[in-house]
Image (cartoon, rainbow, N blue to C red; front, top):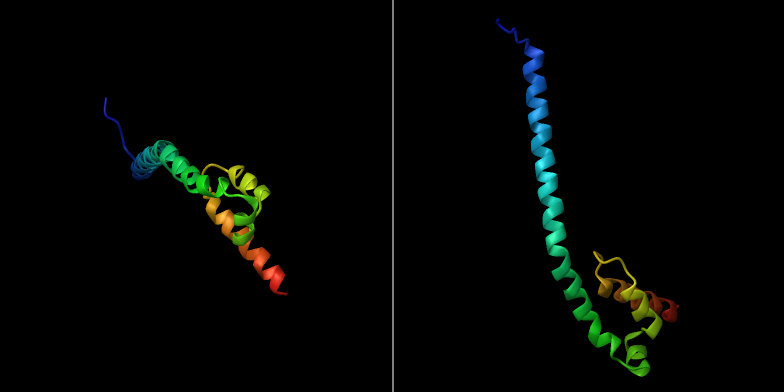
Length: 98
């Protein structure tokens, strides 16, 4: 028995193949993100460690306080907490200048 293939069915097959390829790339992207999450997490925590060990006077010199450090530790894991701290210090400096 012969099958008849219409032109639109060939396009559908290519569409399904391209969707499968996109899904595979999406899966690889998620897998790579999951694998690389831990080194990024440790790098961010390593950067925060010296700030967490500073006393109140040293933090004030940087324009921060101990609550800012606690808030930085509470940031989502994929976000760099040092960027948060830099923004906080910059905002305080801007407010104090006005």
